Image 1: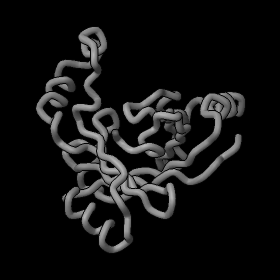
Image 2: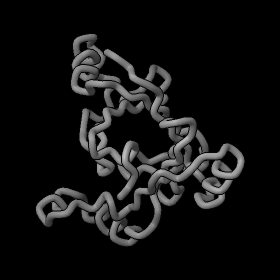
Image 3: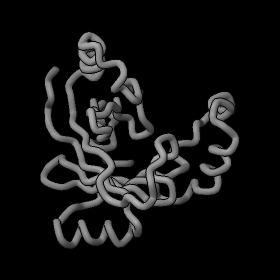
Image 4: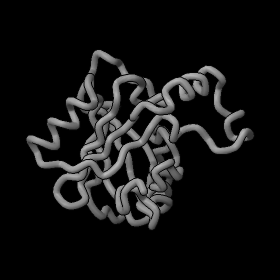
Length: 166
């Protein structure tokens, strides 16, 4: 496994706009891009049919609400701020626990990293197998022995982290 760099720290925010303002004004971060709940709505009816109706209804209701704001800090390192509305629809959090949600690092080959975990007999710590996310970045999720969540990224030429949203 070759770890290229730290990627980001993630925080759940009670007031997303206030947190964005804080990190911009105090730490000098600059918004690189935002993701909206609507970004999680698949483009085809066939793909949408795979999502439970109650989740799809919530996504439709929240589609224009910012879900995540990526703030760039220190040349390619990010602070990832989650809206408290439903920071992780697939991974519900306890709303009483605002703050840290996970840390992330970048690897050059996410499939090789995944295979390394498998070869070490660590299938039980893998939460989400490698998948291409709506920001065009490959991601894998696992956890440490205490349940702390860790995300692994592999950037692509279309990754929003590299080129921004547009």
